[in-house]
Image 1 (cartoon, helix red, strand yellow):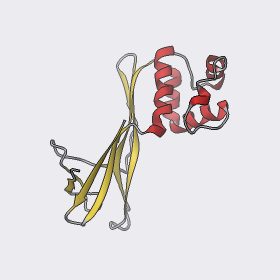
Image 2 (cartoon, helix red, strand yellow):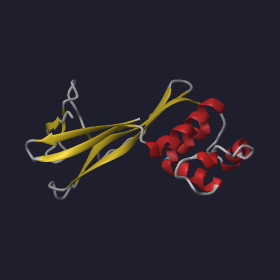
Image 3 (cartoon, one colour):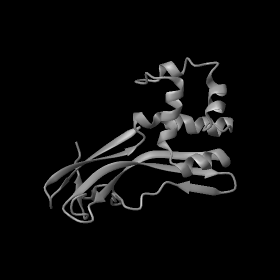
Image 4 (cartoon, helix red, strand yellow):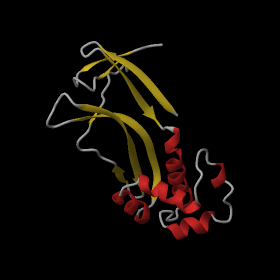
Length: 167
């Protein structure tokens, strides 16, 4: 489920929408990871994936908005994960995961007036043996908020000045 938080910053006099949670277009990645947890098979490998699901492809044709081949579906899922994540999914035993999006700010190093609010996927894996992995974004600043979730980081001035608008 995806939650939308509307805010307004008094300093820059601008509105911002922050999204938290799992958007519909990322649910296939959650399904894929859940299948790895349940089946404990290397579904990153095309042959393993194909052999596992080729008998019952009816589920594939029920995926909303997806009108492509079975192989393209597998490729689309794999494109979401970086090389390190794919390697971990192949070589480690995945016990659980967390998948969501979170608002982050990319500031231009040359011109501090230029910023970009983006919503990036957070990916966390928990493997057998207490091994953990979290996707990192070194050049991004994550939006912060107070304990009451009423004040958020303004993407423009980077201060806790964006107040939640209650509707």
